[in-house]
Length: 224
Image (cartoon, rainbow, N blue to C red):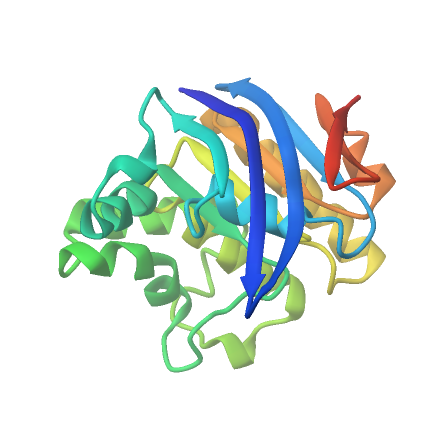
């Protein structure tokens, strides 16, 4: 898989006012590569992640995922493309409290109907990888913060996406748990050979990535 981001910019229009959030961001990544996106609050890091994740459309510029411009697709086709190609891990785990661990893990598969036995088996395999094999029937309220984030990671991998996007995945965790989650993210990244992009303020975490994209004045980003 190849990800190409070429000269993308984002301008939000509020009434008659235009607010530029990103300007001419360019980079590319291939399978197995990782990128940390860093910068102060308000620098456009999360906006950049949303654009790459096809949750929003750039004002100018192009994003191609495996040579596909996702914004050429219809809304229905785009939703399917996003669901099978991209996995998301956010700072908030966003688990559904009424669902069990394995049901939350399988949630992205619900878009295509009831998950078959193969998907259920894969969910069990992922949960074993993240250390939750014995917690599959528990509800989120019965889990620690670190365990909930492990479920979120498992959920992001259920459709075996080639692109994983993380937005401050350890931001709400204590230092010890954050290190465990970081190690887990990278272990699974290396096993699955996907593209990993993570927004983080943590310089120790960023040092683990092959590449870094640093926010600069003027809503631009520079490579390191």
